[in-house]
Amino acid sequence: MTSKAPVRAAEDVDETALSYSEIKALATGNPLIIEKCNLDMEVSKLNMLKASYLSQKYALEDMVLRKYPESIARMNERIDGYEQDIRLVEAHPKPEEGFVGIIIDGKTIMDKETAGKAILDVCTKMTDSDAVALGEYRGFSLAVAYNGVSNEYRMTMRGTLTHTITLGADVFGNITRMDNMLDSLATKQAVVREELSDTEKQLASAKEEMDAPFAREDELAQKSARLKELNILLNMDQKNRSIMDDGPDEDVPEKVRAREHAR
Image (cartoon, rainbow, N blue to C red; front, side, top):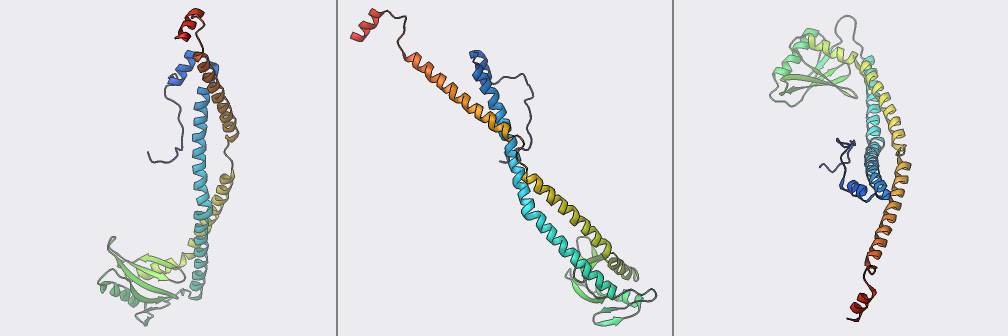
């Protein structure tokens, strides 16, 4: 009903059920008709399996030629982006003691508590959900936006990539969340590297599967050829019977046939 090729084949629930063709074959006792009926079913099943194989092959071609290469390209770009952002973090290290400072609305704030209050102040002054430029922290540009669905404020920290954190109400907690985000970049890069490796393996596996031939191609060809032979033989047999049926009836006396001919 979906016009799509079936992905599975199932045997008849009742294996003892006979089709009309099979009943006809058994009634005639012609072994060629019985063989043809069996081959019809077998070839039909093989054609169904081949249609499913071709459908999967086309899907694999799309994966190999488009989806996987696009995913790999995006992952490589993201890995490079993480690499540049990690270098940016290393160029603006967090001091073991004290506060590195933040720029908010063009003003440099060196006190951590004051910086935390300034971030919350920007959030309370927001009148809509549009992002508001906040400033800069450790080389990353900052912006804040309100998400009405989740009812929370989110900060984006943009270097080469954009990193997002959810803001809380704690004055010091938001600064800590920002630092934790930047400290986690190397871990996130490693996760993407692992995803890239898995995707490349999937691509290689898909290429092998895509190039694999239909496993039962020879069987299908042989049975299709035999079925064609049977159809020809049975058609010839039907024609011969038709010719025989059109001939004179041997049981009719010769004199009767002569009279009929004279008329």
